[in-house]
Length: 153
Image (tube, rainbow, N blue to C red; front, side, top):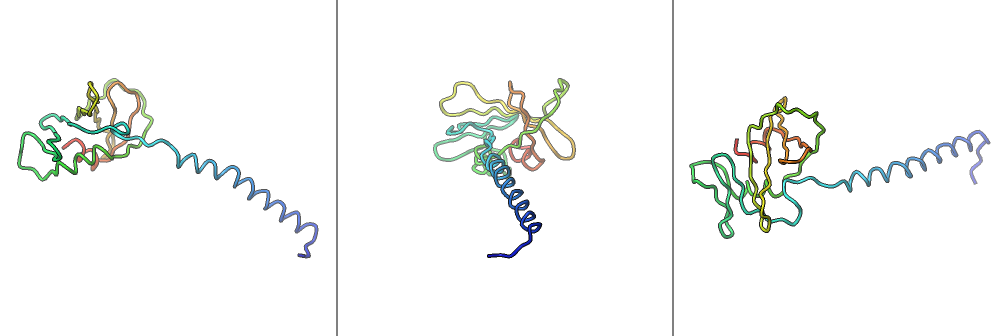
């Protein structure tokens, strides 16, 4: 057995209690962060059918994705469809501002849904953009690269 003075045993006990507090408090908080819901552009288990932009449409024709009208661009329609299906969104709290004007809009049609999802893209500061689903109050933050990829800017 370890020979420690009464003072040293008190120190050991204090550290043991601190470690126990960290374990009981820190681990559940970390698990809660890991289990936080993911925010995506499309609802879970939904299938993308079409995305309409200002001048082009991304359409699924059979098993192939196409941009219409066909313009000579370097955009890969399949990669664009994957970006719309699997992009993760970062929620951000923004003060309400009625003077915001969207720089781009996308109308997303899903298989089995009668109404399209409308996504609005607003400019923000420092090469950042704000994304909002029409009719919702939640905003999401996008960097310039994501905005250019998703909205064909």
